[in-house]
Image (tube, rainbow, N blue to C red; front, top):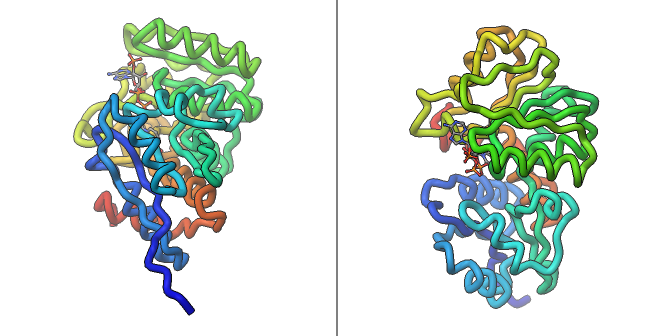
Amino acid sequence: MSKNYRSELVGAFGDPIDENPTGVMEEAAFAAKGLDYRYITINVKKGDLKAAMDGIRAMNFRGINLTIPHKVEVLKYLDELSKEAEIIGAVNMVVNKDGKLWGDNTDGKGYLISLKNANETPKGKNIMILGAGGAARAISVECALAGAKKITIANIEKKQGEELVGLLTERTGVEAKFIMWDKPVQVPTDTNILSNATSVGLFPDIDQKPDIDYKTIQSDMVVTDVIFNDPNSLFLQEAQKRGAKTINGLGMLVNQGELNFTLWTGVDAPIEVMVETLSKEFGLE
Ligand code: NDP
């Protein structure tokens, strides 16, 4: 029988990207499932994305992750999009389907799985989201499509916040509202789920937390964070002090990695291996 020395290739394009730990998690998962796949972490600068995406086709990569600053620009170089990625207007993963590049956004889907794993659902809930960047867009669109009752967006830039509210209203039909974030934000009393989707608190700035009035967090609220390093962010610690149930960003990161793994390989992902690998990578065990 002839031998096969060729690995299937996936990876990530971004800038900066050196400290992105996704490859360690995905490679551990490939090894656990006995798959001859390699995840290559590649620094692609703004302006070089077209050449890099041509490379995906030329080198028959099975797929790729996109991170800062490519999640929106990559849409130009794709053949097809998932419905969700089309509404969100951003793609974080691509599958090469026999030469046709298909884009999806698994950030918000990973968030929904985190809620589900904690026995929570966005359906029928009032959700407040801090931030209006990529993560906020993905989370808010997925929550709206999953049947949220009302979504409130608080953002320090009015234009971005209002744009997201307009998108939610027009494309998903959910009731959506914008709050200008120019002083400590009050969490409305009817909020069921409060989600930090800003970058505040990400390592190395782990001593920072979003500027909200923490007294307005109530014990019956579910409070979630996109920050995965440190997963026990100051934001979540403040919510715990008020008796709220909290869900960290590490689960969301693993969940989207799990979805990407399966979309690329067609094989169920070894979730425990992925959680363990990332936790070890962040020095959590
Ligand atoms: P973006 O840069 O697109 O968005 C960042 C958002 O944070 C913007 O709305 C920005 O406001 C807001 N912001 C920044 N600084 C402050 C501040 N001091 N006070 C209030 N708001 C602020 O980034 P992403 O949305 O792509 O990522 C956000 C975070 O989510 C990152 O830390 C990222 O690592 C994390 N993430 C986690 C994932 C996971 O799986 N756990 C997946 C994806 C992202 P403005 O509109 O003014 O710029």
